[in-house]
Image (cartoon, rainbow, N blue to C red; front, side, top):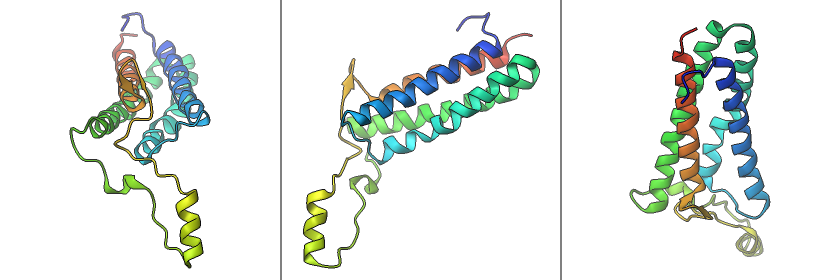
Length: 162
């Protein structure tokens, strides 16, 4: 990261990168790449991180000192997101087992007709199957890389001399 990274610039960059990342996930979903349970849980960091980064940007525009604790919070949030992305990637590569709930939600049918209808309409997205790889990484892998970069950027800005 650059030594001239100011809290304002870092927070703005994190806001834009996080928003672009979650928007990209929504776009892939719109094109038929349905997310699994772990994919959906990985989005939580972005749902919290985008507004937090935007708030940090506004605070940093007025006071870099007040923005620093928010930058540390962003660093922690996206560090956790990176760990979660690594975990999910490991499940996809078969390094360790994923949660047993990643095989779809089972609901009890009231009748045989309801059961047959469920079989025809339920689409199970497994956590250990990769929907798409881009330059060798799954979307979970890219989440780990992007989250690591945003965490590092937040740390660099939080530690920067005023």
